[in-house]
Length: 88
Ligand SMILES: [Zn+2]
Image (cartoon, rainbow, N blue to C red; front, side, top):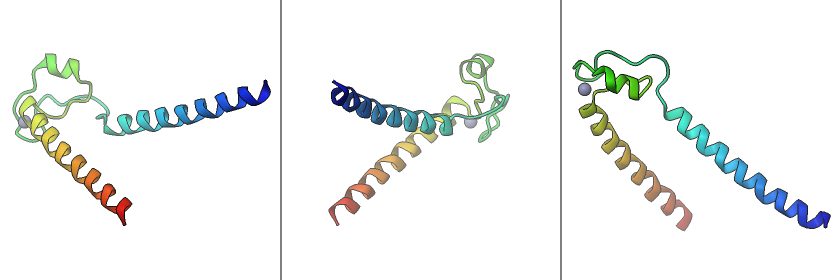
């Protein structure tokens, strides 16, 4: 009885740990503080609706989507890198 319970508990600990990692990762990517009225990159006015929707927004839609593409490239580069190191 007790053994079964502790196995379940260990699995739950692993799940909790990975959820915590994910939350921490998401938090570190979130902008902090108040949003900007003008885009950090191109200085265009950021609509109030966008600033309300995204707390701490720093970029206009155009610059944000460009950044997203860059980050997607960066992430896929990282994945390739870690795959290579596993093969060695
Ligand atoms: Zn911009």
